[in-house]
Image (cartoon, rainbow, N blue to C red):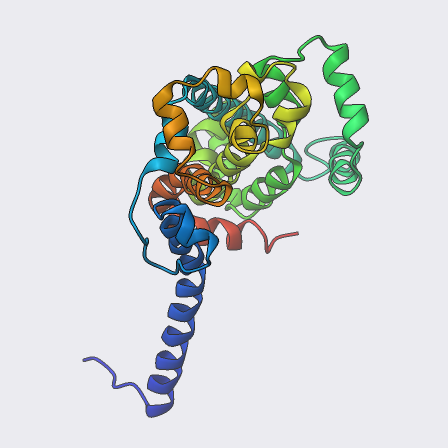
Length: 297
Protein backbone atom coordinates (compact mmCIF):
# COMPACT_ATOMS: atom_id res chain seq x y z
CA UNK A 1 0.00 0.00 0.00
CA UNK A 2 1.35 3.38 -1.04
CA UNK A 3 0.92 6.13 1.56
CA UNK A 4 -0.68 9.33 0.29
CA UNK A 5 1.44 12.43 0.46
CA UNK A 6 0.19 15.26 2.59
CA UNK A 7 -0.58 18.66 1.08
CA UNK A 8 2.45 20.17 2.78
CA UNK A 9 4.69 17.45 1.36
CA UNK A 10 3.32 18.01 -2.14
CA UNK A 11 3.89 21.77 -1.89
CA UNK A 12 7.42 21.18 -0.63
CA UNK A 13 8.24 18.82 -3.52
CA UNK A 14 6.83 21.24 -6.10
CA UNK A 15 8.87 24.08 -4.63
CA UNK A 16 11.97 21.88 -4.39
CA UNK A 17 11.76 20.65 -7.97
CA UNK A 18 11.05 24.14 -9.26
CA UNK A 19 14.08 25.51 -7.44
CA UNK A 20 16.37 22.73 -8.70
CA UNK A 21 15.12 23.13 -12.28
CA UNK A 22 15.79 26.87 -11.99
CA UNK A 23 19.36 26.22 -10.81
CA UNK A 24 19.88 23.72 -13.65
CA UNK A 25 18.66 26.24 -16.23
CA UNK A 26 20.88 28.94 -14.73
CA UNK A 27 23.88 26.62 -15.20
CA UNK A 28 22.96 25.56 -18.75
CA UNK A 29 21.96 28.91 -20.25
CA UNK A 30 25.47 30.49 -20.21
CA UNK A 31 26.88 27.48 -22.06
CA UNK A 32 24.07 27.64 -24.62
CA UNK A 33 24.78 31.36 -25.05
CA UNK A 34 28.47 30.66 -25.63
CA UNK A 35 27.58 27.97 -28.17
CA UNK A 36 25.26 30.37 -29.99
CA UNK A 37 28.01 33.01 -30.17
CA UNK A 38 30.49 30.49 -31.58
CA UNK A 39 28.10 29.70 -34.47
CA UNK A 40 27.06 33.31 -35.15
CA UNK A 41 28.31 35.93 -37.58
CA UNK A 42 30.81 38.35 -36.07
CA UNK A 43 28.64 41.38 -36.93
CA UNK A 44 25.71 40.12 -34.86
CA UNK A 45 28.04 39.18 -32.01
CA UNK A 46 29.64 42.63 -32.00
CA UNK A 47 26.19 44.20 -31.92
CA UNK A 48 25.21 42.11 -28.90
CA UNK A 49 22.24 40.65 -30.76
CA UNK A 50 23.01 36.98 -30.09
CA UNK A 51 21.00 35.32 -27.35
CA UNK A 52 20.38 31.60 -27.09
CA UNK A 53 20.14 30.96 -30.84
CA UNK A 54 22.84 31.58 -33.49
CA UNK A 55 22.28 34.44 -35.92
CA UNK A 56 23.55 34.04 -39.51
CA UNK A 57 24.79 30.52 -38.72
CA UNK A 58 28.47 29.95 -39.57
CA UNK A 59 31.20 27.50 -38.60
CA UNK A 60 34.09 29.79 -39.51
CA UNK A 61 35.27 30.04 -35.91
CA UNK A 62 35.61 26.28 -35.64
CA UNK A 63 37.21 26.06 -39.08
CA UNK A 64 39.83 28.58 -38.05
CA UNK A 65 40.81 26.46 -35.05
CA UNK A 66 40.54 23.01 -36.62
CA UNK A 67 42.49 23.86 -39.77
CA UNK A 68 45.64 24.56 -37.80
CA UNK A 69 48.03 21.68 -37.22
CA UNK A 70 49.11 23.10 -33.89
CA UNK A 71 45.60 22.56 -32.54
CA UNK A 72 45.87 18.80 -32.97
CA UNK A 73 49.37 18.74 -31.48
CA UNK A 74 48.09 20.58 -28.42
CA UNK A 75 45.10 18.23 -28.22
CA UNK A 76 47.37 15.17 -28.17
CA UNK A 77 49.52 16.75 -25.46
CA UNK A 78 46.43 17.43 -23.35
CA UNK A 79 45.20 13.86 -23.82
CA UNK A 80 48.65 12.57 -22.83
CA UNK A 81 48.64 14.82 -19.79
CA UNK A 82 45.12 13.74 -18.87
CA UNK A 83 45.91 10.02 -19.03
CA UNK A 84 49.35 10.17 -17.42
CA UNK A 85 48.52 12.83 -14.83
CA UNK A 86 45.21 11.31 -13.75
CA UNK A 87 46.77 7.85 -13.53
CA UNK A 88 49.58 9.09 -11.30
CA UNK A 89 47.13 11.12 -9.20
CA UNK A 90 44.90 8.13 -8.52
CA UNK A 91 47.84 5.86 -7.71
CA UNK A 92 49.50 8.28 -5.29
CA UNK A 93 46.22 9.33 -3.69
CA UNK A 94 45.30 5.72 -2.90
CA UNK A 95 48.78 4.90 -1.58
CA UNK A 96 48.75 8.03 0.59
CA UNK A 97 45.18 7.87 1.86
CA UNK A 98 45.29 4.22 2.97
CA UNK A 99 48.05 4.51 5.62
CA UNK A 100 46.81 7.91 6.78
CA UNK A 101 43.35 6.42 7.37
CA UNK A 102 44.76 4.18 10.12
CA UNK A 103 44.78 5.01 13.81
CA UNK A 104 47.95 6.31 15.44
CA UNK A 105 48.63 2.99 17.19
CA UNK A 106 48.39 1.18 13.83
CA UNK A 107 50.69 3.56 11.95
CA UNK A 108 53.31 5.32 14.05
CA UNK A 109 53.92 8.83 12.90
CA UNK A 110 50.54 9.01 11.23
CA UNK A 111 49.66 12.31 12.94
CA UNK A 112 52.95 13.94 11.94
CA UNK A 113 52.53 12.90 8.32
CA UNK A 114 48.91 14.09 8.33
CA UNK A 115 49.97 17.52 9.58
CA UNK A 116 52.63 17.75 6.90
CA UNK A 117 49.96 17.24 4.25
CA UNK A 118 47.59 19.71 5.93
CA UNK A 119 50.30 22.39 6.02
CA UNK A 120 50.93 21.96 2.28
CA UNK A 121 47.19 22.37 1.75
CA UNK A 122 47.05 25.62 3.71
CA UNK A 123 50.35 27.19 2.60
CA UNK A 124 51.56 27.14 -0.99
CA UNK A 125 55.21 27.63 -1.90
CA UNK A 126 54.26 29.88 -4.78
CA UNK A 127 55.10 30.10 -8.45
CA UNK A 128 58.82 30.90 -8.24
CA UNK A 129 59.81 27.98 -5.95
CA UNK A 130 57.75 25.61 -8.12
CA UNK A 131 59.44 26.91 -11.27
CA UNK A 132 62.91 26.57 -9.69
CA UNK A 133 62.18 22.99 -8.60
CA UNK A 134 61.00 21.99 -12.05
CA UNK A 135 64.07 23.58 -13.63
CA UNK A 136 66.43 21.99 -11.09
CA UNK A 137 65.09 18.51 -11.86
CA UNK A 138 65.62 19.09 -15.58
CA UNK A 139 62.05 18.44 -16.68
CA UNK A 140 61.29 21.87 -18.15
CA UNK A 141 59.52 21.83 -21.50
CA UNK A 142 58.38 18.22 -21.04
CA UNK A 143 55.14 16.47 -20.13
CA UNK A 144 56.56 15.70 -16.68
CA UNK A 145 56.66 19.40 -15.85
CA UNK A 146 52.88 19.45 -16.20
CA UNK A 147 52.26 16.20 -14.32
CA UNK A 148 54.69 15.84 -11.40
CA UNK A 149 54.11 19.15 -9.52
CA UNK A 150 50.46 18.16 -9.04
CA UNK A 151 51.03 14.43 -8.56
CA UNK A 152 49.49 14.34 -5.06
CA UNK A 153 46.42 16.60 -4.67
CA UNK A 154 46.16 16.88 -0.90
CA UNK A 155 42.47 17.75 -0.82
CA UNK A 156 41.65 14.57 -2.72
CA UNK A 157 43.84 12.57 -0.35
CA UNK A 158 41.88 13.90 2.63
CA UNK A 159 38.62 13.13 0.88
CA UNK A 160 39.62 9.51 0.24
CA UNK A 161 41.18 8.86 3.63
CA UNK A 162 38.00 10.05 5.33
CA UNK A 163 36.04 7.69 3.11
CA UNK A 164 38.40 4.83 4.03
CA UNK A 165 37.91 5.60 7.73
CA UNK A 166 34.16 5.32 7.28
CA UNK A 167 34.32 1.75 6.00
CA UNK A 168 33.49 -1.04 8.49
CA UNK A 169 36.59 -1.95 10.48
CA UNK A 170 35.33 -5.53 10.80
CA UNK A 171 36.01 -6.18 7.11
CA UNK A 172 39.69 -5.35 7.51
CA UNK A 173 39.99 -7.37 10.70
CA UNK A 174 38.36 -10.39 9.05
CA UNK A 175 40.81 -10.12 6.16
CA UNK A 176 43.78 -10.02 8.53
CA UNK A 177 42.44 -13.07 10.38
CA UNK A 178 42.37 -14.91 7.05
CA UNK A 179 46.02 -14.00 6.47
CA UNK A 180 45.59 -11.07 4.06
CA UNK A 181 48.32 -8.45 3.90
CA UNK A 182 47.76 -4.70 3.80
CA UNK A 183 48.26 -4.74 0.02
CA UNK A 184 45.65 -7.45 -0.46
CA UNK A 185 43.24 -5.69 1.89
CA UNK A 186 43.65 -2.42 0.03
CA UNK A 187 43.13 -3.79 -3.48
CA UNK A 188 40.51 -6.44 -2.64
CA UNK A 189 38.40 -4.72 0.02
CA UNK A 190 38.96 -0.99 0.27
CA UNK A 191 39.05 -0.05 -3.40
CA UNK A 192 35.99 -2.06 -4.52
CA UNK A 193 33.97 -0.47 -1.70
CA UNK A 194 35.24 3.03 -2.52
CA UNK A 195 33.89 3.42 -6.06
CA UNK A 196 31.84 6.58 -5.25
CA UNK A 197 34.82 8.36 -3.71
CA UNK A 198 37.21 7.15 -6.43
CA UNK A 199 34.83 8.31 -9.17
CA UNK A 200 34.54 11.73 -7.53
CA UNK A 201 38.31 12.08 -7.20
CA UNK A 202 38.80 10.85 -10.76
CA UNK A 203 36.48 13.57 -12.03
CA UNK A 204 38.24 16.24 -9.96
CA UNK A 205 41.64 15.22 -11.34
CA UNK A 206 40.43 15.04 -14.92
CA UNK A 207 38.94 18.53 -14.71
CA UNK A 208 42.12 19.88 -13.10
CA UNK A 209 44.40 18.53 -15.81
CA UNK A 210 42.11 19.35 -18.71
CA UNK A 211 41.37 22.94 -17.67
CA UNK A 212 44.86 23.88 -16.54
CA UNK A 213 46.56 26.37 -18.86
CA UNK A 214 48.80 28.66 -16.79
CA UNK A 215 51.43 26.02 -15.97
CA UNK A 216 51.76 25.27 -19.68
CA UNK A 217 52.51 28.93 -20.36
CA UNK A 218 55.14 29.04 -17.60
CA UNK A 219 56.83 25.63 -17.85
CA UNK A 220 56.85 25.11 -21.62
CA UNK A 221 59.61 26.93 -23.48
CA UNK A 222 58.21 26.14 -26.92
CA UNK A 223 54.60 26.75 -28.06
CA UNK A 224 54.84 23.38 -29.83
CA UNK A 225 54.67 21.75 -26.38
CA UNK A 226 51.65 23.70 -25.14
CA UNK A 227 48.66 21.65 -23.90
CA UNK A 228 45.33 22.45 -25.49
CA UNK A 229 44.18 25.05 -22.95
CA UNK A 230 47.46 26.99 -23.18
CA UNK A 231 47.31 26.86 -26.96
CA UNK A 232 43.69 28.02 -27.09
CA UNK A 233 44.57 30.92 -24.83
CA UNK A 234 47.03 32.14 -27.47
CA UNK A 235 45.05 31.47 -30.65
CA UNK A 236 43.64 34.99 -30.83
CA UNK A 237 45.62 36.80 -28.14
CA UNK A 238 48.98 36.24 -29.82
CA UNK A 239 48.28 36.45 -33.52
CA UNK A 240 51.53 37.82 -34.97
CA UNK A 241 52.78 38.66 -38.46
CA UNK A 242 54.48 35.25 -38.55
CA UNK A 243 51.11 33.62 -37.92
CA UNK A 244 49.59 35.43 -40.90
CA UNK A 245 52.58 34.52 -43.10
CA UNK A 246 52.05 30.82 -42.39
CA UNK A 247 48.35 30.91 -43.24
CA UNK A 248 46.89 29.78 -46.54
CA UNK A 249 44.50 31.91 -48.57
CA UNK A 250 41.53 29.92 -47.23
CA UNK A 251 42.63 30.47 -43.66
CA UNK A 252 43.03 34.20 -44.23
CA UNK A 253 39.54 34.30 -45.75
CA UNK A 254 38.16 32.55 -42.67
CA UNK A 255 40.03 34.97 -40.41
CA UNK A 256 38.19 37.87 -42.03
CA UNK A 257 34.86 36.26 -41.10
CA UNK A 258 35.53 35.74 -37.40
CA UNK A 259 36.14 37.89 -34.37
CA UNK A 260 37.85 37.58 -31.03
CA UNK A 261 34.52 36.86 -29.36
CA UNK A 262 33.40 34.11 -31.73
CA UNK A 263 36.72 32.27 -31.59
CA UNK A 264 36.88 32.51 -27.81
CA UNK A 265 33.35 31.13 -27.60
CA UNK A 266 34.37 28.21 -29.80
CA UNK A 267 37.41 27.62 -27.58
CA UNK A 268 35.32 27.61 -24.41
CA UNK A 269 32.84 25.12 -25.81
CA UNK A 270 35.54 22.79 -27.19
CA UNK A 271 37.38 22.89 -23.88
CA UNK A 272 34.24 22.03 -21.91
CA UNK A 273 32.95 19.32 -24.26
CA UNK A 274 35.19 16.40 -23.15
CA UNK A 275 34.33 16.89 -19.48
CA UNK A 276 30.64 17.19 -20.34
CA UNK A 277 30.83 13.86 -22.15
CA UNK A 278 32.52 12.12 -19.21
CA UNK A 279 30.51 13.64 -16.36
CA UNK A 280 27.19 11.80 -17.03
CA UNK A 281 28.94 8.46 -16.50
CA UNK A 282 30.40 9.58 -13.14
CA UNK A 283 27.50 11.74 -11.94
CA UNK A 284 25.74 8.97 -10.02
CA UNK A 285 28.86 8.52 -7.87
CA UNK A 286 29.61 12.21 -7.51
CA UNK A 287 27.30 13.34 -4.69
CA UNK A 288 27.71 10.09 -2.78
CA UNK A 289 31.49 10.45 -2.85
CA UNK A 290 31.38 14.07 -1.74
CA UNK A 291 29.06 13.43 1.21
CA UNK A 292 30.56 10.17 2.48
CA UNK A 293 34.12 11.38 2.13
CA UNK A 294 33.59 14.72 3.84
CA UNK A 295 31.58 14.16 7.00
CA UNK A 296 34.17 12.08 8.88
CA UNK A 297 36.94 13.56 10.97
